[in-house]
Amino acid sequence: MSASTDIRHVVSIAGSVQDSVTDVRLGQALVEIVDGPPEFLARVQTLSNDPAWRRRQLRIDRTTSQADGIFYFVDLPAGAYHLRVSLPGLGSRYGAVDLGPVQVRAGRDADGRVFVARADAALPPTHIAGVVTRGDTLQALADARVRLRGDGTVVATNEEGRYALMKLIAGTPTLEVSATHFVTASRKVSLAPGQGQTVNVVLQPA
Image 1: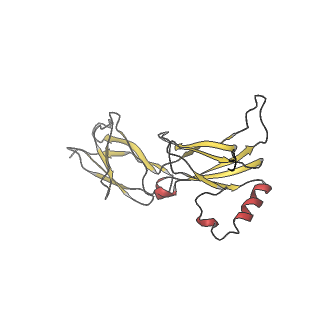
Image 2 (image 1 turned 45 degrees about the vertical axis):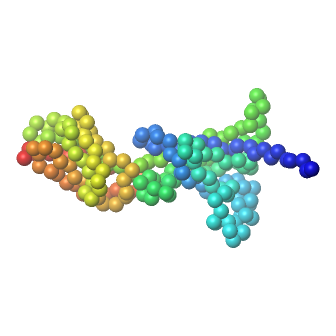
Image 3 (image 1 turned 90 degrees about the horizontal axis):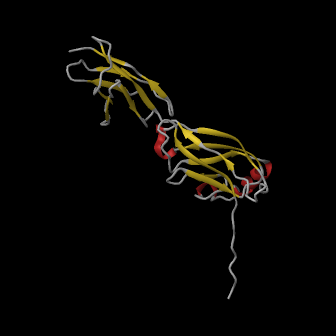
C-alpha cells in the first residue's frame, strides 16, 4: 500500500471580474499574465517549447474566472506581474482591461497568513445610453422605445427619459427611437469594443 501525498498550492494572485457599469460579476473571463519577473518568464518559455502548449486549457500564465467572477493564480515566483482581462467568448461586447503592476510577495505576514496580491478588473461593456425628450416641450419622454435597427432587443425610457442598451456588438449600428404620437428618429452610431456612446434624441410630435 503506497502512501498518498498531499500537494498544497499557494494562491499568489486573486481577484474578481465584473461589469464596469452594472457591477455584475462576470464568469468565463480570460485572465492572462502578459508580463512578469524573469523567473516566471523563463518558466513560461520552457513550457512553451511543448508543441501542445497553445492548446492546453490549464496553463501557468492564464486562467478563467468562475461563475461568481473570482479568479486566481497559484505558486507564482515573487515579483511584479501585468495582467490582461477580456471576455473573448462575447466577441466585441466588452473591452479588455490591463492590470498592473501586481506585486507578488514571498513568505507570510505577522499572523502567519500567506501574502495574496489582489487584482480586480472591471470590464467596460460596449453600450449606448442617453436621454429622450419631446420636441414641443423639451421635457423628458417616458416609455419611448429604443432599439438598434435589425436587433429585436427593445428598451423603454424611464420617467426621466433615460435609456441604456448594453453589451452591444461593435460596429456602426443605427439607433431607432419611437413613441406613440411622435415621429420616429434614427441616428447612426459608431461603436468600438468596450466603448460607451451617449446619444440624446429629441422626438417631434407627429
